[in-house]
Length: 130
Image (cartoon, rainbow, N blue to C red; front, side):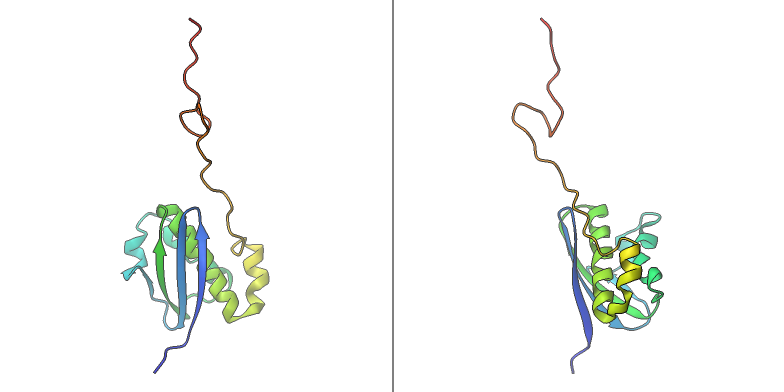
Protein backbone atom coordinates (compact mmCIF):
# COMPACT_ATOMS: atom_id res chain seq x y z
CA UNK A 1 0.00 0.00 0.00
CA UNK A 2 1.42 3.40 -0.95
CA UNK A 3 0.92 6.47 1.18
CA UNK A 4 -0.22 9.64 -0.63
CA UNK A 5 1.99 12.68 -0.04
CA UNK A 6 3.07 15.92 -1.69
CA UNK A 7 6.78 16.61 -1.96
CA UNK A 8 8.74 19.83 -2.52
CA UNK A 9 12.29 21.10 -2.16
CA UNK A 10 13.18 24.30 -0.29
CA UNK A 11 16.57 25.99 -0.34
CA UNK A 12 18.40 28.78 1.49
CA UNK A 13 22.15 29.58 1.52
CA UNK A 14 23.87 26.17 1.44
CA UNK A 15 20.90 24.30 2.98
CA UNK A 16 18.51 22.10 1.02
CA UNK A 17 15.34 20.54 2.47
CA UNK A 18 13.13 17.82 0.99
CA UNK A 19 9.66 18.24 2.51
CA UNK A 20 6.81 15.72 2.38
CA UNK A 21 3.27 16.58 3.46
CA UNK A 22 0.89 13.76 4.45
CA UNK A 23 -2.73 14.12 5.52
CA UNK A 24 -2.56 13.81 9.31
CA UNK A 25 -2.63 15.46 12.71
CA UNK A 26 0.22 17.99 12.60
CA UNK A 27 3.32 15.99 13.59
CA UNK A 28 6.59 17.35 12.20
CA UNK A 29 9.75 15.24 11.90
CA UNK A 30 13.04 16.80 10.79
CA UNK A 31 15.78 14.24 10.01
CA UNK A 32 13.76 11.64 11.99
CA UNK A 33 13.65 13.86 15.10
CA UNK A 34 10.77 15.99 16.39
CA UNK A 35 10.99 19.53 14.98
CA UNK A 36 10.99 21.06 18.49
CA UNK A 37 14.11 19.03 19.27
CA UNK A 38 15.87 19.77 15.95
CA UNK A 39 15.13 23.53 16.07
CA UNK A 40 15.22 24.28 19.83
CA UNK A 41 15.77 28.06 19.69
CA UNK A 42 12.98 30.34 20.78
CA UNK A 43 10.92 31.50 17.81
CA UNK A 44 12.16 28.77 15.47
CA UNK A 45 8.89 26.81 15.55
CA UNK A 46 6.88 30.01 14.98
CA UNK A 47 8.94 30.70 11.88
CA UNK A 48 8.74 27.07 10.71
CA UNK A 49 4.93 26.95 10.97
CA UNK A 50 4.38 30.30 9.22
CA UNK A 51 3.28 28.79 5.86
CA UNK A 52 0.70 26.64 7.68
CA UNK A 53 -0.55 29.61 9.70
CA UNK A 54 -0.86 31.85 6.61
CA UNK A 55 -2.89 29.20 4.74
CA UNK A 56 -4.88 28.20 7.88
CA UNK A 57 -3.86 24.53 7.57
CA UNK A 58 -2.20 24.04 10.99
CA UNK A 59 -2.77 20.51 12.32
CA UNK A 60 -4.06 19.17 8.99
CA UNK A 61 -0.77 17.70 7.74
CA UNK A 62 2.01 15.50 9.06
CA UNK A 63 5.34 16.72 7.75
CA UNK A 64 8.58 14.82 7.28
CA UNK A 65 11.71 16.70 6.30
CA UNK A 66 15.18 15.64 5.19
CA UNK A 67 17.48 18.66 5.44
CA UNK A 68 21.18 18.85 4.59
CA UNK A 69 23.91 21.49 4.46
CA UNK A 70 24.28 24.97 5.91
CA UNK A 71 23.65 26.06 9.47
CA UNK A 72 20.61 26.25 11.72
CA UNK A 73 19.12 29.45 10.21
CA UNK A 74 19.68 28.34 6.63
CA UNK A 75 18.12 24.95 7.33
CA UNK A 76 15.13 26.53 9.07
CA UNK A 77 14.44 28.84 6.12
CA UNK A 78 14.94 25.96 3.66
CA UNK A 79 12.34 23.88 5.51
CA UNK A 80 9.92 26.82 5.59
CA UNK A 81 10.40 27.36 1.85
CA UNK A 82 9.80 23.65 1.19
CA UNK A 83 6.59 23.59 3.26
CA UNK A 84 5.24 26.59 1.35
CA UNK A 85 6.04 24.95 -2.02
CA UNK A 86 4.43 21.65 -0.96
CA UNK A 87 1.26 23.45 0.19
CA UNK A 88 1.11 25.09 -3.23
CA UNK A 89 1.14 21.65 -4.89
CA UNK A 90 -1.78 20.57 -2.71
CA UNK A 91 -3.91 23.63 -3.49
CA UNK A 92 -2.91 26.23 -6.12
CA UNK A 93 -5.44 28.63 -4.52
CA UNK A 94 -2.93 29.15 -1.68
CA UNK A 95 -0.52 30.98 -4.03
CA UNK A 96 -1.80 34.49 -3.22
CA UNK A 97 -1.54 34.32 0.61
CA UNK A 98 1.83 32.53 0.44
CA UNK A 99 3.16 35.06 -2.10
CA UNK A 100 1.92 38.03 0.01
CA UNK A 101 3.73 36.61 3.05
CA UNK A 102 6.90 36.24 0.94
CA UNK A 103 7.14 32.49 1.52
CA UNK A 104 7.45 31.33 -2.10
CA UNK A 105 10.49 33.43 -2.99
CA UNK A 106 13.85 31.73 -2.50
CA UNK A 107 16.10 34.09 -0.53
CA UNK A 108 18.98 34.75 -2.97
CA UNK A 109 21.44 36.06 -0.39
CA UNK A 110 24.53 33.90 -0.03
CA UNK A 111 28.03 34.19 1.38
CA UNK A 112 30.20 36.58 -0.60
CA UNK A 113 33.40 35.11 -1.99
CA UNK A 114 36.85 35.98 -0.61
CA UNK A 115 38.81 38.46 -2.76
CA UNK A 116 42.57 38.26 -3.41
CA UNK A 117 44.66 40.52 -1.18
CA UNK A 118 41.91 40.69 1.46
CA UNK A 119 41.49 38.64 4.63
CA UNK A 120 37.79 37.94 4.01
CA UNK A 121 35.30 39.16 1.41
CA UNK A 122 35.79 42.81 2.36
CA UNK A 123 38.16 42.99 5.35
CA UNK A 124 41.49 44.48 4.26
CA UNK A 125 44.81 44.01 6.07
CA UNK A 126 45.60 46.81 8.53
CA UNK A 127 47.14 49.87 6.83
CA UNK A 128 50.58 50.90 8.11
CA UNK A 129 51.99 54.30 7.16
CA UNK A 130 55.66 53.46 7.92
